[in-house]
Amino acid sequence: MADQLPVIYGRSNTRAISLIIQAKTVCWWSHIGSPTPGRTVLEAVGGIGVVETPWHDFLNRYDQVITGWIYCRDLAEAYRFMYDKKGALYDKKAIKGILIGRAWDDLAAWHCSELIGGATHIWPLAGISQIWPKHLLKLTHDIKRIK
Image 1 (spheres, rainbow, N blue to C red):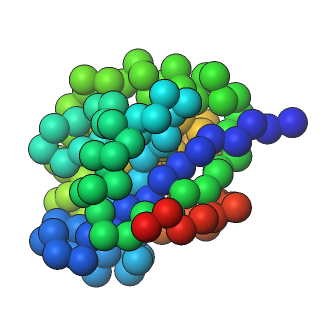
Image 2: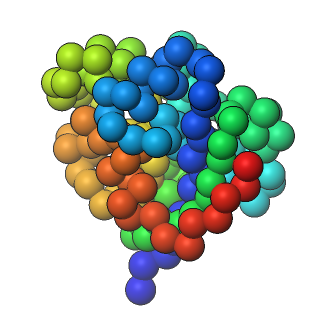
């Protein structure tokens, strides 16, 4: 039986990059991370890379937030995958890819959806380019509005 990875989505109504991502990907949500049992969020943040953010900092960054669950092969393996990526670069090619509507593939760098998609092991790592929050949202269940 598959495990379930907790996920958290964010939407900003004022931050330019969030608005651009929402428009270009035709999705209400522009960002996704994964809450941890320690009240932090594992996420890939633009211009920074893969980080572990305090829960309240994530909530303060977004105007609207929902949580839910995505099936994954193994929860411990999913968290190990994300923790192993901490400190990795942000996938700047992803923003360019979103803007021009083309795929990208830099397995040494990560954007938010690639990190979560890779952690679930639903897609092969070589196939996670051009995954956006809207693709993961289709797999998310038990959604609850937090903010």
